[in-house]
Image (cartoon, rainbow, N blue to C red; front, side, top):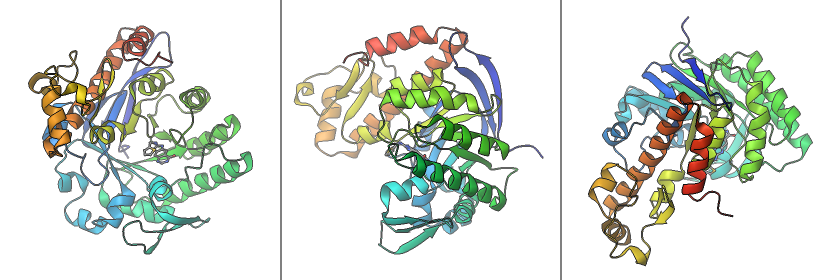
Length: 375
Ligand SMILES: O=c1[nH]cnc2cc3nc(NCc4cccs4)[nH]c3cc12
């Protein structure tokens, strides 16, 4: 049986662990490394599918937790699945809900069977098991889906993390058994283990022994420093097979994306570009620009003078500032469009620097110009 998703390693960058790859999915073949915009409730906020296509988005995310609670996976299934429901014909990946339960739900209790929590919308008691998460993702119909895992606090005790890793591995096994559509939906295992090298190794080895078509590295971008995240990636990525995609969950700033690619990561997602856009903060090649700031009231330059996106070619800081301050939805559309373009363009430049074997020079340019070296 053909796997739902096939990764081909095209080229290794000469001086780092970076890889140029191709990810074949039932909805197209896409280049990696890639950034995946987040569309939590079956829409990338303030963006149309046409605009997402225009800026080069290949795979977008939606969330099992949110769509299960509202509108219900049954409605999405009846619509013909997520691609039809949201009119997106390229790749879709769903997270499994565990992380959202821990970051959104009120009161939650984790047991071997699964996680009990109160629905953040109506306060009702809910229960999510590894099997239930897989059933929801099978019904939603994404190309790539995640096993139910526990994303523990990064600074928990060794014993807590060890127990959590072992339960996450048992849940991954249960998810594999419950998965109904392995020929057109690729189930990824999620490696946990916080900052402990031996637990990251144990988690990776458990999941690799189950032969998933791809692996996520979870438990990061949860408040630890960028140095700590990079250190965990240094020793975790090599535990994963070279011929499978590696997905770092929740990472989406220019510096972290580049440092993740250097350490062998192929796929990234983050709410950051669209979340900060909603309060008028823009990513630019000269650092962050808070466009609602009064100093831009008469600034008729584009958000970013080095950007060739539709927004930067047609609208000024003064106009976008006005829209954001007037709570005009078009304003957040423009800032969201630009921020997503910025990260997708950055990843295109990263892929080119892998082809040219000059990723470290590109990193230096970005860190210097975009202001990441400033202490
Ligand atoms: O271990 C994980 N398992 C399943 N999903 C995740 C999603 C994740 N997203 C972040 N960080 C990005 C954030 C988004 C919102 C608050 S933090 N870290 C994450 C870790 C996990």
